[in-house]
Amino acid sequence: LPFLEATGGSIMLLGEGGQYLIGPQEERWDLAMLIRQNSLQDFMAFSSNADYLAGMGHRTAALEDSRLLPLVEYAGSSILPQE
Image (cartoon, rainbow, N blue to C red):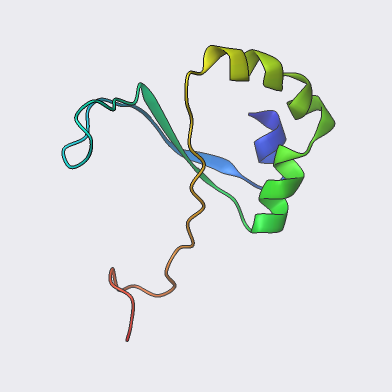
């Protein structure tokens, strides 16, 4: 994804999906992608790039369903958030 890299982003994980271990049994995901972006502004710059958007119709037609879930990484070395 050259437009992702141009805005400082990178793919952290691209994996084959399947049925949930916990969740609706009728749902199944074929593919999951986790990307890292420096900021929401950088992600918005990536997702609003005219050249990226030009290919959006093909991607949308190929997908039955999709999700976009923004996450914010906890700072520090602890896995759990500090109280």
